[in-house]
Length: 82
Picture 1 (cartoon, rainbow, N blue to C red):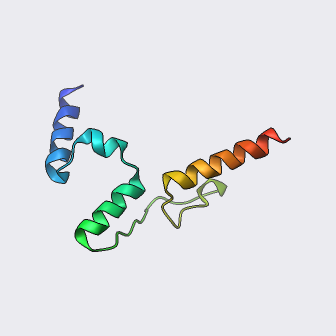
Picture 2 (tube, rainbow, N blue to C red; picture 1 turned 60 degrees about the horizontal axis):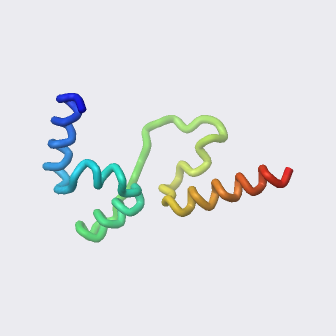
């Protein structure tokens, strides 16, 4: 690990109170729920990225891991039936 990465991870750990490894392995949706429970305020995600083309059809919401897994299985099943 580089010195810069180590310093960044230490800063993140101090700011969040959790290890960098835990943050890496926690799905975004689970982390969001945890923060909302702790603070009692609903989080709102926005993006300044310009959404262009068909690839950003879910830009209006954050999807959880289970949704992505279901969509992948459905896509693979559809592809295998052709």
